[in-house]
Amino acid sequence: MGASVSSTNILENEEGSICSSSRPGLGDIPESCISSLFMNLDPPDICKLATVNRAFHRASSADFLWESKLPPSYKFLAKKVIGEENIATMTKKEIYAKLCLPNRFDGATKEVWLDKCSGQVCLFMSSKSLKITGIEDRRYWNYIPTEESRFNSVAYLQQMWWVEVVGELEFEFPVGRYSLVFRLQLGKASKRLGRRVCNADQVHGWDIKPVRFQLSTSDGQRSLSECYLSRPGEWVYYHVGDFVIEKPNELINIKFSLAQIDCTHTKGGLCVDSAIICPKEFRERLKQR
Image (cartoon, rainbow, N blue to C red; front, side, top):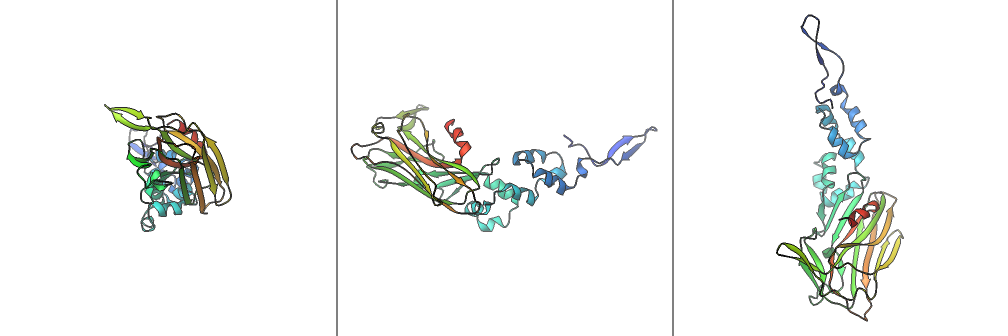
């Protein structure tokens, strides 16, 4: 595309001498006009067009352009992961680029980023950010290191009668529909001679009664479902519920849980990796991982 087109085209006249024409080129378009046109494009396309020429590159950095790509609630997110002092020294393009990367917060127990296309948030909460009944007693639960978690550790249940995992989050989400899922596995995976193996010896009790999943929000949205845990040796994304954000710049409190508290039998061999909040349409992508 016209990277080599300049504002003045060099021509040769009939006598062989060099003259110039005044035909305009891409470089003559005012940068403010280019930036305004870029507002109709998705960020990945803007970045591609920024390589066309210098004018396009400068236009692609306009603050008003990137502010239009940031969700109205971006200041809340930026303060959490960048810090108020750092925000003041950054351009809107730099803020956008930073927010689109995975960023840890709350003592590195949570990770969040902005989806480039939808402008919605993806948020992961590690097992260490969740309230797990009995986690302090090593007879029941242990944190074990693993490369299969983005947080490099999971909570592993050896055996217990009362199994309950509770999470709570207060956050400003961009407008949209979101799903919340738990990432769980029956069995403890490890590597042996370079190959992945899963020990399912302690897996028991999950086929007797289903696990109850619950979600509630501070604006009255609720979800309740039950599901048997299955597929030992595989990471499974169990759907807890969906919620809708209709108003930007408003804090919402989300409570969620999984529980199997039937004390007629013990349960064991469960790995709890994380809870995930993502745009609803992304949930199918998680299943394909």
